[in-house]
Image (cartoon, rainbow, N blue to C red; front, side, top):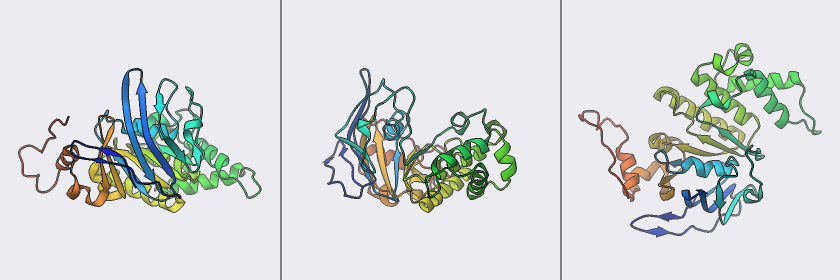
Length: 295
């Protein structure tokens, strides 16, 4: 994992990209009119690795990752040296108001309630994905019965055991945690090479957040997918990803191995994020640490 980093202390140039990179982004900048949302964003994600992009709201992390997913509309001006996924030049894809799916890329969104179709049942939505992606050896779609059986199997894999009820339910009839599990099942049932998770646990409590992160990491490994996660929660990223990229005001300010980032952080913004994570040491404080403004 490499990234171009500009900090008040140092400038680090990106290393050469490995030949087997699953995703390569170099010098990505995104503007909306006169506003620059992302500037000089670069990263490399190798097959099977897990990368987190963290930062406060408005830092540009979701915008950068949605550019990779193909979800930016024609109102965005996108410039980059390269944006490649699995030998596909994503810069050459036309952009429109209605996004076109990138084969091999799946997304778990922040709010499953607004991401799932409120009219179709869970079974209809999950089997539609399976029938379009899980083709037989001769290139034909599986039968509806076979797809329904696969859908029930995927619900069990994400921890939903009452499969008949869940398959027949519409999204508004399920809890938030159940909907997010359904989203994970839909995303991974197509056997993607890259899973992009945009704040997948932000609407859940701490216990459910941890359970769903464990589930998503395990299942993405099972299908052989790399994971690109957008998050505010630097503590979860430290535990469940291999590498963390920190963004501030549209730029990457620091990056490093997730497990050691707290000890090796140089940029004051990264140190501030780490200091704001509640710990046993800070439990007795009258006020939790806060992050000072960083230019």
